[in-house]
Structure formats: structure tokens, C-alpha cells
Length: 126
Image (cartoon, rainbow, N blue to C red; front, side):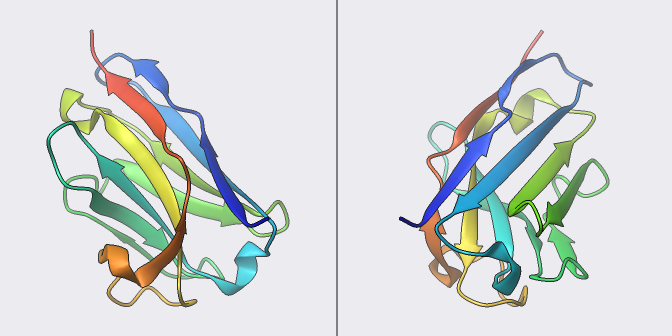
């Protein structure tokens, strides 16, 4: 069964860091770009980062650029999102998703993704 499972969320103080993981099962990640999205209460789900299948290309939303780093370990079938200098406005449920292609074109559009994880909650609060 094809699955994406996020982990690593939790409660962190402003300025702190968390690393999210997205583990795939039932398929090999190395043919697909993987994106990270987040959804805050009352807001639409937004794309925040993407990494190409080989890891050579990454993109970030302006809201997280310079603070978040996406990476992947295809041997472990896992994608990571290192989140630094977290702010209260980063509070959301974070999702990873499999893009329908190996590249990062049009990466912020949810329709470009075919499988989603169940999400992991990140709360930034003092």
C-alpha cells in the first residue's frame, strides 16, 4: 500500500527548530519530486517547499526562505524539512505530498500532487 507518513512535529518556542520527516512506503521516492505544504486553522493549504527527485533542485515559499531547508535521502526513502528560527505564524499542520513528476515545475499547486500524508502538527508558542 502506497503511503507517506510525516513525523517530527510538536510544540516549540519561537526561535526554536524542528525537523520533520516524510517516510514513504509502497513505492520508491527516487522517481518523484516531493513537496511540503502546511495548513493553518481557517486558511488554505499552502506550498512551502519542494525538492526534485534527485535532490538537485529545491524551491521555497518566501515565508520560509532562509529559515527552512528541504533535503532527501533516497536510500532511506525519506524527505526531510529542517525548520529553523520558527515563528508563531509557522503554526500549522504540515503535510508532505508526492508530485506527479520528478521536476519542481508548478510545485505550489496542490493539483500537481497525487498522494498526501496525514499531516503532523507544529505549534510555535511560548
